[in-house]
Length: 239
Ligand SMILES: *Cc1c(COP(=O)(O)O)cnc(C)c1O
Image (cartoon, rainbow, N blue to C red; front, side, top):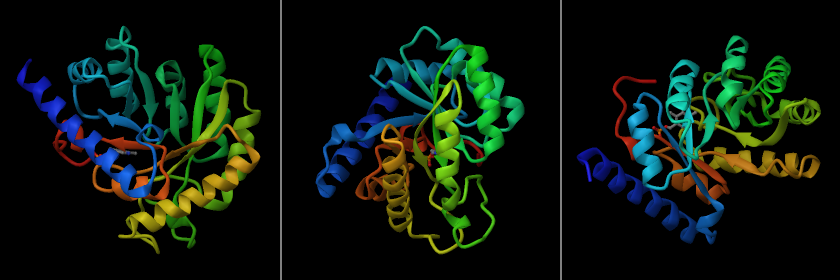
């Protein structure tokens, strides 16, 4: 086993253990929480090693990097998640490899993604990204729709050819009433998800929790956690 493979295997096992322990604490089944490994800034070789260790779900946040990695890992049975802020001029590229887009936050993006998915002959699961710091009227810092916009966006996704509403996603806010209170933020997301599922029963994904707050996310009901540095190591530079 190469050093890097052993290192990834060890970190991956520790993250899986954290998820299992958080599930036990919350009285949930570990199989109901899916680990998505965020491989941004790390090379395709790491993605390949992770696939060899049993990882099936990977995420990226920048199209250029993701397109390259997805192409060089096309022989692997991986599900690709796009979790970064998405510009409409990138949707044609993203639609070629992304199975899920977690960052749908405006109607214009729905239209653009729909055309791109149709052109690519693919059906993309779309999560509405919720900016919980926009609830108080403050401007979101990392993209995301206001909680009150989720219904309209999900309806648009349901009506858009090539797309389907898969759920909701959030990043714990750095400002506003939820700053420093990730569990409260994720509980709010869970409420938004419950309301969404009443209208769109297939939209079951609750994407929340990163390396620092996966326990809080699992406690609040997350179905998908997005873990980068705890598996791959601390990224050089802030991204
Ligand atoms: C980078 C990133 C993650 C993973 O963050 P870590 O703290 O490295 O686990 C999760 N979600 C999004 C949207 C990201 O950009």
